[in-house]
Length: 263
Length: 83
Image 1 (cartoon, helix red, strand yellow):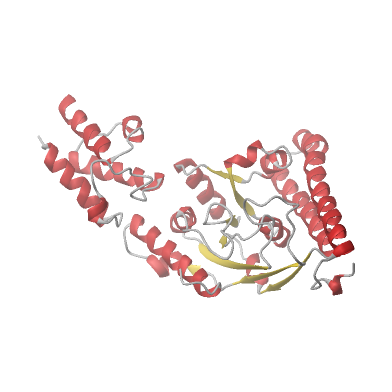
Image 2: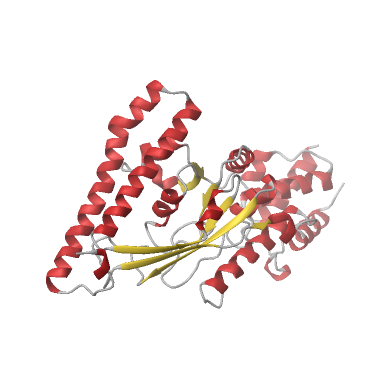
């Protein structure tokens, strides 16, 4: 199926192709993770010092993710549009995003290979990605002061950090209440917050849905980087706890507006 | 020495003023994390505020095991009595 036909609905043979192509894409993704664990990580560990290793691992992961995305696009499973993603390139930003699908972070890392990323602790139990997460030095969010300190140090060193304030995937067509981890990072590091708004239509790869429960047609993604905002400008001069809450509400309202939701 | 009532009042005022908790929600049984939207960074700030109020070092381990408003008051009062 050519990329031009991507808006077409899947029927009959198309449905079978969609299932096969989806299975193949995820198989390549999983094999990439296992290959990383078995072959790439040991070489990196032996041959390079820690920081160097971390950035090499991130480049390799971004390459693997780009391959996965290119494959899904080639198969006509997904398409995407991007707006103002040049804004991602500025150093030391807290990059936040809503989280409609399983593969949002795959896109974001492919857009910004050197980014740091906040991941759920449960990913360390996933054999397909565990090794890559560790090698890339992604931050495990355990809601602790140690996490905050590590994140602030990374931001101050110029890394940008991708974080999903909802903590997990958004409910279909909606948004969870934002955790304030991103706000605390931005406040303590005095880092700008860059919101990325992600649309995916029709809803697909949503939480609680197995990969083989396929959407009715090609998933069209839309990524838009908004104007970054400064934490101090939104919530400067007030006590940290209140500032974090104000930032949380500010960001949540911003997303509600851009996603066309009431709240 | 501070009374239990004073500690409770201070805790309630701090939760309401600094952490934007609804005053109605501050009951002895209210759980800090689940019911009052306090996260771990908030808890650390709360501990600092209690230390400034009582003038005594709060044992972080005891404080971390506190789940509810009553647990926090108990921990602070036990500490005040011990010293």
